[in-house]
Image (cartoon, rainbow, N blue to C red; front, side):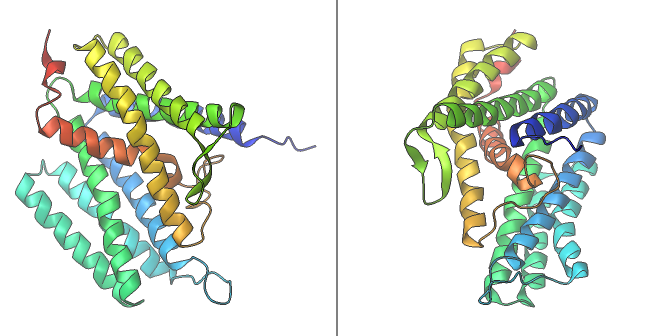
Length: 282
């Protein structure tokens, strides 16, 4: 008799397999980390074009894109991220390459009409900028590994405690028109989880600025939930529940990393502004 697993059990099993592998690759760094990010970018790009072209149509059926074009659309963000990572990119070259990739994505989408072209261009930005942000964070001298592990830790903790608090406590809905299952209790769980993860990672890796990083982590719990809501709004626009079924219990890669996308962008912006300099202190 087949064993039936709950959604939460599937989430735990997937995390148990994926997280240790990701942590090892983060520690190994270049070029393994760059390749990992490029693979994730390809998966996200593929899911994005599937959602844009596979949503509900007038007759209620999915309007599928030709497979070849589907994969071409996914290849652009992955190629840009891989080239940028492996070439030790500069800022100017990076912006030019991302701009060209965005233009190419719009050009591919144009064959399906103006609306799809705009969504394809938006997808290029949505996928590539967070991926490049993670590359920039990992490339930080001395603390790159610690920063990425911190970002991953607080994102996973925020997502997990939000899920647990939302299911066990319930209560008023956070954004019922966007994500009916999200509650204010879940948001509180995300903030608490992110803060605790920040505290744990800071102590574990012996980082400077323990309380600064703990408070910042808690605030990033809000950002993580905001990223989740953005992706939910995108899927709801196209009438799609899950971005794909690649990861058991999670749906697709976009479903898994929607919070990470937002957190990576914000942390990269903070890092570029110099506000994470306290991590270098003894």
